[in-house]
Length: 144
Length: 81
Image (cartoon, rainbow over all chains, first blue to last red; front, side, top):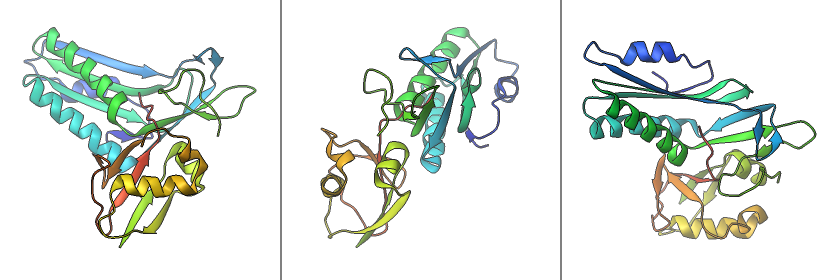
């Protein structure tokens, strides 16, 4: 199944796909486009990806988490394309017999996504040029 | 030999292209290729250090030696999630 998608993320379907009857814990993280960034209003964010590599990195993250948490199953999905405020950009579910591993795997998954998966955000807001978000700099994204 | 360069996000805008094919000498490293690109693209020259880079969809270090047909992508700061 494609981990990078231009269609809506469906958390309930991810949980249903991952959960087994031995799992007593389901942890989910959903990233959502918010209406402000670094003090400036945001209307939408366009997510762009190095698609082939992003798919591979997302798969690797799932595989590495399966090795680190053998009883836990973690699924990671990320949107591409233009999302408006309130739309879901990333969805992670971790299912496990117990909550500690479910929470831990879910947390590690989102941190790994942010650190490794080649995805970029073009932020749009009223009265300013679209700007690529650069988490390595303080302040709003800067136009070229 | 030839390598294929891919550009994304702000780098795509800086270069004005999605990709290009470049002729490089045998033994060229990823860092060597970056230094050559910096000379031609002012946006790249503003980077103090080499950005993250992937060869054939895998992260590599600057010491990696390039091979014929490699797909090389210097990655602007990523911002997923």
